[in-house]
Amino acid sequence: MIAVISGDLIKSQKIPQQEYDAMLYQLDQSLRFIANRFDADYTIYRGDAMQLHLATPDTVCCAAILLYLQMKAANYELRQSLAIGKVDNPRADIKTATGSAYTLSGRGLDNMGHQRLILQIDNQPLDEGFLLNIELIEVLLEKMSQKQANALFYYLTAEHNNHAELAKELATSRANVTKLLNLAHYQLIERFMQYSQTTLKGMTT
Image 1 (cartoon, rainbow, N blue to C red):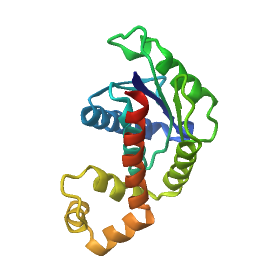
Image 2 (image 1 turned 135 degrees about the vertical axis):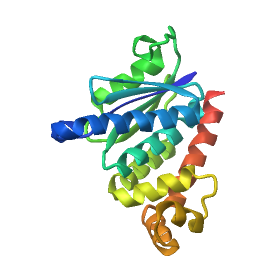
Image 3 (image 1 turned 30 degrees about the vertical axis):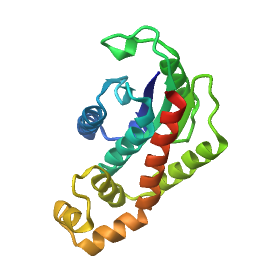
Image 4 (image 1 turned 90 degrees about the vertical axis):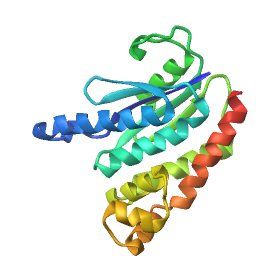
């Protein structure tokens, strides 16, 4: 079992032409960070679309949330279709790989409309509670401001993430860091990431 994330940038057609290269650079750098952190592979295609392949499927929600936060911190929003399934024909170029994980993820992206985050598992319906949690996390991510997303991304990825250390990293006050994280509902999102990894590990091993 592997996990695949297919995604694209929301309203990318409205990005001015002179900013398009900067957007693509940010997408590449964000995907590179996630790939290094989760030992994953990625590709960018069709301009603003991407696909990420994770060998550890239980980390798929964590990877998707961190990627969303990093892009939102740069003032871009991403739709992501997450899928866990099989790989039938692995390829060095993941665009040409085949298997249920790729099929579910790609079809999910084509059909997800205004959603920002969905998850499917091949031949295994998700528990209603898990689906509800994903929908709630999606609402929190969508309503998050750019500064809140940036603070939360640093909190979730920093080696030393106490608020005083984060304040130094973000060149702001400790009180402001705490305010931003609280507004981002950081404890709920962190708990969901831990819950998703534990739950998915039990479903995919």
